[in-house]
Length: 487
Image (cartoon, rainbow, N blue to C red; front, side):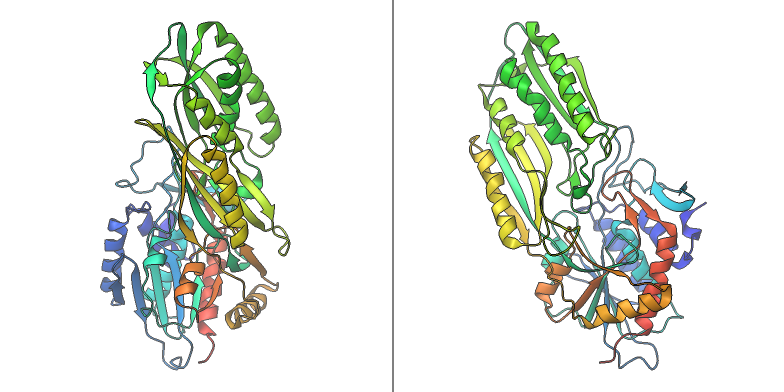
């Protein structure tokens, strides 16, 4: 079955169209052009701002001109993640989709790659509203931002004064039946440590150590699940080998994106041949311990050791210092919220580790709904790597979105949801970086709520979207628009 025929077809046909257009973060040229053409082809007022965001406007239907304007908002880019054995070029190839049954429910997923339902389904819902001729609504705007996933570039670059709406409904949440009114702020941590190389010592053999088979996932939404971080596991594996068995680090590479929990890490070491057996036993011991610790939530872990070749190693003890710093680096949940049950307050994702051309680098993403806690975590991060002699700097800081429990649109949406589905929606804050925080700083008078269909494992090749939840969210949004508050 093609996903374009799923219910509601008006949403799924648009999402299918989005899957056919490459749109990885920072490479959104094709999707920007697609959206511009789509808007103009449908006779919709369409505007591209200086940074590449797309804004569309649709006038109120007859008799609804006195309603507050509602802005539907989502982001155009997607996280480009794939399994190692999958051949896929995210800058050229369409996403291959399929419908699968899980516990009797229909889900849409991709074939070995991320699906892009984050946030393609939100964009598709807004597109369906814009092109519909049979809906009742006040003035509608849609804002489609670029590069949400790797820096919120579109939201940061949006100029004040462009938007005319009173209310913002962000469509980037990932659990139907939940209305989000707050999100965490973020901070990017960066590390650079220079190294020199020397020839492979006499009597040494080279081995590749591979950590793989982990679930990975979204570094905000799924950081609380206790899944393994390949970079942390690699550091734990390497530490006794470098420290106690006189091994030298040749190279290391793990993770690809700040906001994705790393699933794989590969390191090459050189070790005295007489210590090879001890090294293999040491790796086995680490594997057994970690497997026992995370097996119930991340059971696919593998740590492989294979002989390889190397001509040089990192000179001196810089490799050991770096691995010690990785071991000390904060990772995972730092603190849970004292005010909102079940909400992660502060966390860090040790996301990307790489050695290349004499430079060891680390990329992390720190999140917190409390700015001072985020700052404190950044100091812990900095100290770990500065003690190893590295340069540490921070970029991309943004504040969170403070909940407004007295929001008029929140009350309206709660009442509508309860009337439609005979139950109260959950009112939530999220440990992830919704664009609402940035947009609210530029348009402080916007009344904001975030919602969306149910997604699982976004930012990983296991990403999937619950089909029935898309229909529920569509019906809900239609009803909210029909009952837009009066000015």
